[in-house]
Image (cartoon, rainbow, N blue to C red; front, side, top):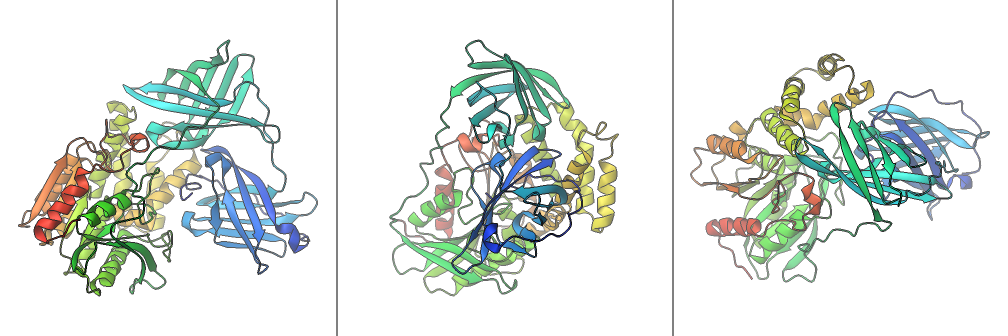
Length: 575
C-alpha cells in the first residue's frame, strides 16, 4: 500500500463549489467513490471508506482499485460544516471537498504535488460492458534485444462494467490502468497512459489470442501476441527463506527514542543467541524509500532472512521500522539520509546499555550503506561496518551508471541512453547545487523545455512532478553526497560487497571507489560476488524485473560471509 498512490501525477483543478447544508452525521459513513483523470495514468478510481468508531469519531481509509488491492489508512480525516478534509502525509496527498446536496456528492480537489478535481459520491461509476475478453492475457514485446513481459488482466461485473490492468514485470510496473479498452467485432484496442503506449490488434477466431501492434512514444512499433492464460489469478510467489517460528534464539520486540529528533520513537525486533553473552551485535540499516524492519519487497523479507542466519551464527541483530513506518513514530517525509543516521545512532545507544551486548556495528544495504558511514561521523564507538551495495562513488555518477544498466536491461538502445545523458546530468547538477528551491525549479523547467523534450514527450504536469521529486529534501541531500571523505575517516574493520549483476549500484566502478576512498584502512575487505543482483539474489540478468520472480530472497553465501567476517574479528558462538 505504501506505493499505491505514489505514482499519481496530478494537475491544477477547478474551484470548490459553494458551501451547502450538510446531512445528518450518520449519513457520512460508507464508501465514497470518485475518479481522477490524470495526465500520465489516465483515469484512476478512488474510494474513501468512512466508518464511525465506538467513540463516535469518524475514521477513513483510501483505496485505489486501479492500482491494486488493499486500503491505506487516512491519518488525518474530518467531515464538518459540510466539508470533507483529509491528508496522507506519507504520500504528500490531501483532499478538500464541499457537500452539494442536490447532486449528493462532495465536489473538491485532490492534491499531490499538483491538483485535480475529484467528486466523491456513493454511486459507483460504471464502465462499458465488453464481452469475450475476460481473463489473464500473457505476452511480450522485444526492444533492442530485451524481452519485456506483458500481463493484461480483464474482468467484468454487471455493476462496474469491464475493467483492465496491465503488468510489466521486467519494468517492475504493476496494476497500470488501461484506458480506452474497446472491441469492434474481432478488433481490440486499448491504451496505457502511464507508459505512453497503445495496442491495436485482432482477436483470433477461437477468442484465445490477441495479435497486433504495440506503439510507444519515442520507440518503433513492435508486434505483440497475447495468449489467454485463463481466469484464475497467478499464485502468490514462493518465498521459502522467510523464517517461520518457533525460533531457536530469543526474540524481543523493542522500542527506543531518538533524542535528537523529538517525536521519533523507533520500533524494532531484536534477535539474540541463547546464553548470557555478551554477543557481537549488528544493526541493520535499510535502503532508500519507506521500509519496514524486514525491508519487505515483493513478498521478500531480506532483513528477516539476514537476521535469522546471523543470529543462528552467534550474532545479535537489531532491525527496526523506518521513522513514520510500521510501528515507528515520526515522519518519513522530509527526512534526509543524515536524519536517518541519527536513527541508526539511537539504535546503537539503545544496544550499548545492555549487558548482553558486545561490540556493535552497522550493516547497511544500498542507501543504508551510506547512512551507516554518516552515522559514524558522530559515533566513534561503532566497531565495524558492512556495506551491502553501499555507494562508493559520487551520486550523479552512481545514478548515471544505474540509468544505463537498468535501461539496457529494459530494452533501451545505446543511442537512447546517450541522448538522455546530458539532460540527466544537468538535472542532477541542479538538484545537487546550493540554489534555493525556487531558483532550482526555474532552472529545471528550462532543462525540460519543449525543444529538448522533443516537442513535449512529457506533458507539463509530468515535468512538474519530476521536478518535485528532484527538489525533495531527501533527494537534494542524496545528490550532494560524496562518499570519499566520509569513508576515508573510517578506521574500523569494513566489509564492502556488491553483486556482479547489480543494475542499481554497478559493482565494478562502485567497489573501485570504495577501495580508493578507504585506502588507508588496514582492515578493508572488498568483494564482488558473481551472479548476484542488487538484492543479493542469485540472478539470471540482474534486471529489476527478476526480483519478484526469483524465489530466493538472499543467496545463503551472503549472510554466511558476513557472519564469518564478523566472527573472525569478534568471536561468536554459533548454534
